[in-house]
Amino acid sequence: MKRKNGFFISVSFILPFILVILFGGVLISIIIGFILDDFSPELLRVSIVNSVVFACGVTMNMLILMFLLKNTGLKTAVFISFSVSSGLIIFDLLYLLVSEPLFFYAYKNVVSLYLIINFVFVITISIVMTIFICMNKMLNDKENEFQKEKMLRTQTELSLLTSKLNPHFLFNALNTVAALLDDKSRAEKVLLDLSALLRENLSINDKSLRPVDDELKYTEKYLSIQKVRFENRLDYSITGDSKYQIPVLIIQTLVENSVKHNADLDVLFVSVNVEESGGLLKISVSDSAKRLKPEMIGQGMGLANCRDRINLTGGRMEILDGGVEIEYKI
Image 1 (cartoon, one colour):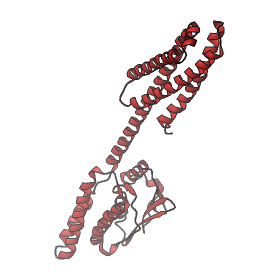
Image 2 (cartoon, one colour):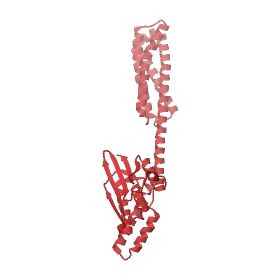
Image 3 (cartoon, rainbow, N blue to C red):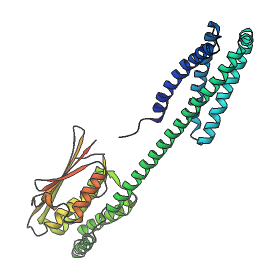
Image 4 (tube, rainbow, N blue to C red):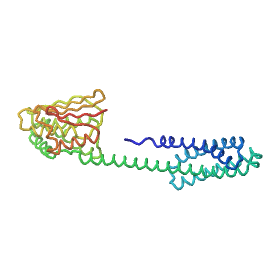
């Protein structure tokens, strides 16, 4: 489960403390007044004004810290918090001297004790809130690092699992070209398709995903070469399209698997169908032999790698009715 936004958590944590400051300042003045037996309505009025000033000041202090913490550490943040809180006390003292000089003189004992206790009270709350915001930022930073590491690990796993062009296919294609030397046009087409495959195979070294349409074009070139090699023994159909990105060489690997394990048949038909419907991308790779079974996944590297790469990118692969079904939510 993802952590909530750090700003929302910090604000939701600050609000209760603001209420504590508002009511705490008033409560402190009442308690001090009764302890010193010198309580008056004027003291209550002044304490209410002071509590509002402190609450607004602490709020601004915390909001500023939330933005400054991107470039400051815990010690600096605590120092800033202490400085702002001290400034609030000095401002409050000056306010009383200017606006209520008679009250300040008449109740100087009560006011002095009130300011000292309120100073400790506000400082404590400010430092606690500052430490909380710092800790929350540290947790968010660690989670961001974890997510980055997870993404890099996933990309590394995909890179390791990505199939390359089968060298046996390359040798067979070159042998096919050699056998077609008397048919220049067909030999030229095979060479062009093979060249395109090799060029694309080099270009995908730094990629883990690419659009389905590009995968279909790559697969069509592969099947076109195999069609020349097997002639009437092989036919194929590729239908549908999609811009959704999937792991590279997934479709080609599955098609190659069909051709490789059914080369002994007199006739083989390979079908690739892509369909987007109801927020789902469905890719089916099947052949007329229908020899695939669910338990075959894991017996060889090809199917297992395809399944792992699809799972890593949020998809699902299963064997149904002798073919492979791939599904992604889009």
